[in-house]
Length: 255
Length: 311
Image (tube, rainbow over all chains, first blue to last red; front, side):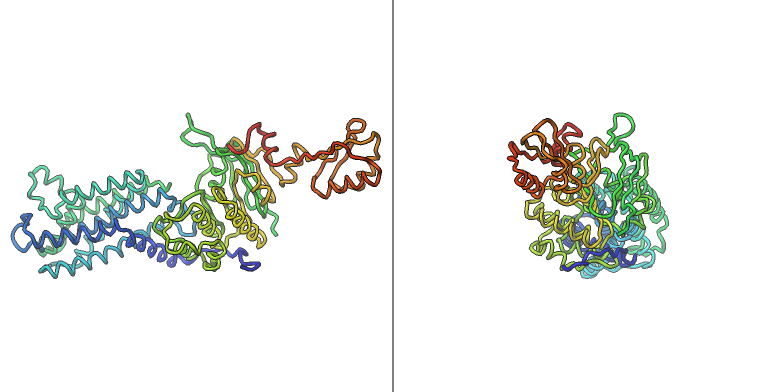
């Protein structure tokens, strides 16, 4: 390199370009990570195929896939927005990635926007894949697509808030363990593959307030039963989103 | 070159862990760094990293003021960040990212970045190939962090222990890049606990101990300051010191301490030694017991604090 190569010429790239670059890198990192793919792609796909074709769980009247597909879509949202994001962000914090980026021209809200964008891109890929598989298994969804999108978006907001809260307050290893444990517990107790009415009455009403239950129940109301707008479930998700994002904003530590 | 300081820290205080039982990391530190290369030299735990990270906007001062390129690093961060380059002591890269991928990414966040391929070649990062960051050697990780600090063509670069853990060859390569930055008008603030690094690179050295700057100046000034570099010899008493002084460079001093015992102080280099011996030859003097006492920054540090620099 010749003289003058390093002559100062500072400046931030245009904001949309920075956010797009950041979102692209985050998505690439996620798709390259084997554990993340297991969580976001392999597990939902396996559960959908397995429980649709083998009659293990009593999913009520009608085709099993009509009950399962909405639950698996809810699981996919949770795996990306909550578990995957919590683990990835926890380790980015641990390895100083968040710290280093904080010194770059990309503002913090730009970084968070890019993370959200990356989560949404991943979810679109998941939903596309799972929808194709569900159709192949004989799925016949009903309902209002706008209600589905609204549920997915509010679910993403609720799970992102909780995931970032965990990533920004706990140690990376604790986040890894806790996020996986929560994923497993909510998979079983959140109406994803096991209908909530299999649980005793008192437990049922508590489980029904979980974000995963609200999301799977709401999606099922629309896609299986053709409901217009599941306001109750949307309300629960909105409440979780406000609490989760609010707490994350308040307690998130960058280092 | 501008003459206003690139970094101006006044009476900075930074404590960790609350007011009771907490640790005072920086305790009334003053630092003025002019354009060029400034080394912040001190032992581990002296407060170097805390000071640098306050300049980078990571920490809010408990009291005192910090200005970097005339800006407040916390409240004017958005204006400041594009103009500075930051090399953290460790980490800062996605563990699954490749070196070139991460460097290209940081370049994309800037308006007029350096040519990434040329920078990769310059720092010998081409051999990293498709290896992910977590599998790179410590030296490769350090060089990537350095590249990330300069790729946005900043006016001012902060390097926190840029050569810690590097082998001598990689260390030289880093020094060469730092010198090139300076030659092209980039200012550099670097922390180090290697006095040779400070002596080799810096226009200005601030010695930090226990959260304060205890001495600041060019390496030459510092080495001359507390304990002068001296050359001593003995000869016959009553030599013409004024004539010797005329032969010496302007900033050198000479004196007959006791009859027949002479001391020359100043920048003691081979040239000065040659000047003294040839003066002696011209005056038919046999300089007996000639000795050179060259003080290093380490001596200065030892003298100022009573402790070893590496610790």
